[in-house]
Length: 112
Image 1 (spheres, rainbow, N blue to C red):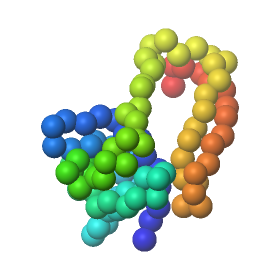
Image 2 (cartoon, rainbow, N blue to C red):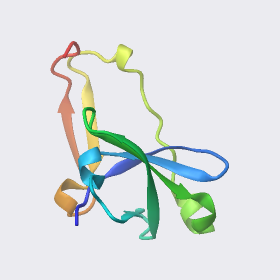
Image 3 (cartoon, rainbow, N blue to C red):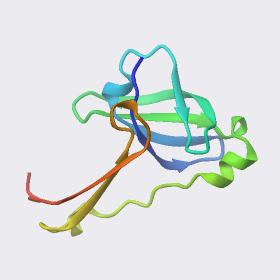
């Protein structure tokens, strides 16, 4: 059993779409997502890429309660072309499966 974190990337008429690390869901028989309101929902793996260590999951919107839908937000992403060395960054996750965690850092280089 593995644990990881992810972000809500978008939704369509049917599904809520999330992205996580591929290594978190690799070889999983069942994938569950726990939202910060405590609700847990089964997710479907839509696609993954080992080289970028990314996986896309979906959860049917019809399975989410009204309360959960009101509580969640789709992530707003920046443009990496505007990133500058020295810019402050914030990482939000589920470090080692222990729950919500946050850390800060700074961009050391942009051409790697």
